[in-house]
Amino acid sequence: MATGKTLIAYATKGGVTEDAASLIAEILSNKYNLEVDIVNLGKTARPDLEQYRNVIVGSGVRMQRVYRKALKFLGNNFENKKVAIFLSSAEAGDPKSHDQAILKYIMRNLAKLPNVRPVAAEAFGGRIRFFGKTIADTRNMEKVKALAEDLGKKLD
Ligand SMILES: Cc1cc2nc3c(=O)[nH]c(=O)nc-3n(C[C@H](O)[C@H](O)[C@H](O)COP(=O)(O)O)c2cc1C
Image (cartoon, rainbow, N blue to C red; front, side, top):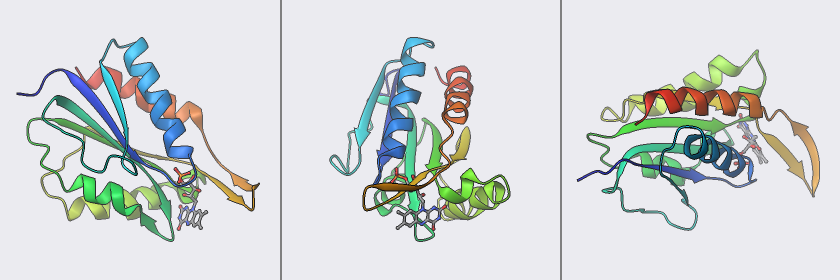
């Protein structure tokens, strides 16, 4: 039996998706009184989903691909749960390629997952570091907050 809990499960390589997951969790629990657990899919690949009514999945994108761990997790059975998806992607951080990034990295993957019908899906920018130096940074925490607010109204 699903309880009212919300799970945020994320896959990250550079930490940006993790920061977004933490901010979303903070807003959902502090402002919307949801009980939120956060799981790093790199450490816990198969969290027990039974206890959750809402599942939010986050991932980064590299080499034109959503991280494998997040895609694998999206193959779970989310029957009777509300699902939302967010991505950190350099392409999504550029207004010129944002919509194309949503299409490539979210819609095309969802087309292969007919049982996943998210209540919200968004892609934010990301950050690219090379030998410890940031060479591109299109992170947008305001957009992350906006998604959290949207989810706060849609999830219960
Ligand atoms: C080696 C490498 C390849 C990348 N390839 C892509 C890409 O194909 N498309 C894209 O939108 N962003 C790409 N990015 C940018 C990442 O999406 C960005 O670093 C994001 O913050 C990754 O999320 P994470 O920090 O949670 O791992 C790439 C970054 C790196 C370091």
